[in-house]
Image 1 (cartoon, rainbow, N blue to C red):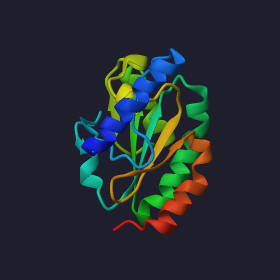
Image 2: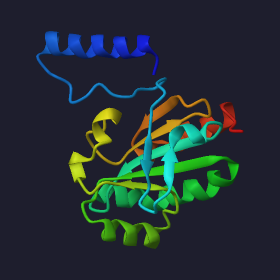
Image 3: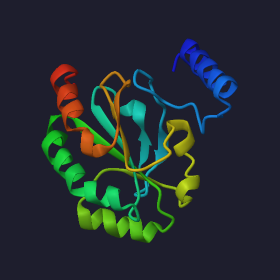
Image 4: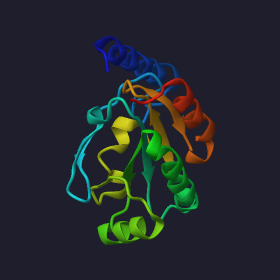
Length: 170
């Protein structure tokens, strides 16, 4: 994120707090931002969003105890099957507190992409920087590293199709 973008985000958050009396949970990544994401996956692999430059990346916040997340699981697998060979990389950010449950479920439903797990549930350290306050929540990141869309995964088919049509991955 550029220094100017950080300053603009801080100004917006300050104005929201001053004029509405509401202090935002976080001032987080938005469409057009270049998010940062580095972690060790639950499988022990080093994951760095910057390493996926040139690909279209979907970052998916989810949990096994989240009914809507589990409803979307077959959809996510289908999107991965369709777009994975074309350059899609999905990264899961899991909000479970039980890693064994998360691992079992990911294997059962076919989530064969990297998963972040810290066991803290809603205290997950990635929620605040990404501005996630409900799940499921997905972000589509273009080949240049910028967020092109964010929302509920049930609504991402057209934005993902558009990303592949207009931002062809390397």
